[in-house]
Length: 355
Ligand SMILES: Nc1ncnc2c1ncn2[C@@H]1O[C@H](COP(=O)(O)OP(=O)(O)O)[C@@H](O)[C@H]1O
Ligand SMILES: [Mg+2]
Image 1 (cartoon, rainbow, N blue to C red):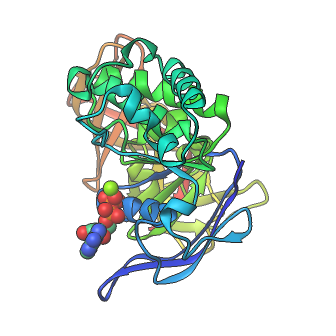
Image 2: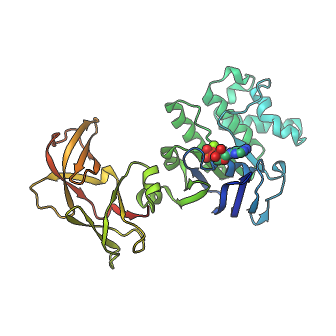
């Protein structure tokens, strides 16, 4: 298993730095995901790890060995692309055998290894087919076998599920995750899909304009976003401007003012003056009767109610005009449109974030 270290990496096209002094350590055997919106530099970073794009500054290491200027074919990487990139004129068997033949491995070993990897991805019965006669999901399974059969040090995948329909995406995603754990290979997986990232990753790096905005386990990224950008990109979040009244106390809670009330929120490690914004996920908010004398609540009017089967989602407008989305579980929601309510903020699940 290979550890990847990236130090102050810069990749520029002309004058523009697409990767901007990025540092990260990817532990050996980790399922590591680069997540972020289109254009933030995910593919560029992956191609630089692969050796298909050249760093203009910084260092890339595999297990401590400098790989920054090592040619792609000497890095020991396996790669899977969004568009499969199979050879259309070769059978499934020959596609998977390609890398082994290039390494002048003997025929018998090739037959054994190709057979074993095709079985592993559930494609053992398709060895004689051509890519044109396979579905998208089957093609991606073949591409995965082709990447893994040469036993690379690192597996790199660039949006491998993006061309598949919703159901297949989940199936192939689970196959990839199972296989990665079984083989134990260090994997860098690129996606713009937050649910995909949360489902399969050991660690997620959320990228923003060529930099890593936050790095952590799925639970940390979702549960403890440090910036408004992260809270907004992963899942849904209400981002509400507030005035900071009292910075973190001994319990790690801060006091903020919203309209005419003070709320207790998680200080979330934010320094004083760092933040005048709180994030609260719709499912962490509750609605109470307006008359209730509620601690940690703010009044508003229900503008819209939507019944979604397993939950009811409300849009509540505060007196200052700020809309708040609240998701209540259960099959029947008790609030009406036009009703004045109190939006209850859970002090543990509402947090200060940097803007
Ligand atoms: N070969 C290239 N030449 C010039 N600009 C590029 C090239 N490749 C990517 N870019 C630019 O770099 C930025 C990041 O692109 P990319 O890494 O493909 O992002 P992502 O994969 O996150 O969508 C984009 O603004 C893109 O236009
Ligand atoms: Mg891309």
